[in-house]
Image (cartoon, rainbow, N blue to C red; front, side, top):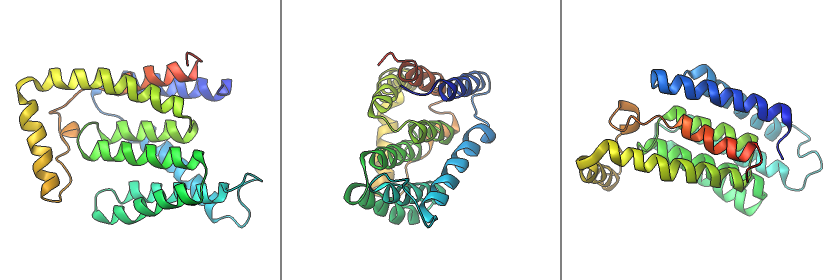
Length: 209
């Protein structure tokens, strides 16, 4: 069970972001990028410190993998992101533990969803922060079910007859070896996801699952 003080802070953070997302349809960098940078900095310190792991086997390799995943996020606007992404996956699954694997895969999936336009960059950062704080498959399932089922339904309702054109656009960009258009950030799929993420996280944080 998550510690009381941390889950209270995370819950209040999610509530604040959810209110902002509904009212402004945009998330402030201070509340999304800021925490992510702090977490990425923590990965860097742990990965580069002379003594790491605190006695946990392979924890040092987890930190290296997570640092590379963080580098992937920083380079996500270029194809250079592919190199640290592949390296992070390799290290996590060959030398790391389930904790590192959970964070690396979760971060890369959130980043891919953002690049494909399924969600905005701010939404992806919220997921990354949550998974870094709580690398638990139960949290991943809660977020996936709530955002996947409800979010997809809302997205299709918003698109209506344009769903086919949207899918064709993504397919065309992938065939052309380009990142798909970021429809989630330009308003075409303007569905606020943070309230859904907050519900999914609350289900996990407060012991429903």
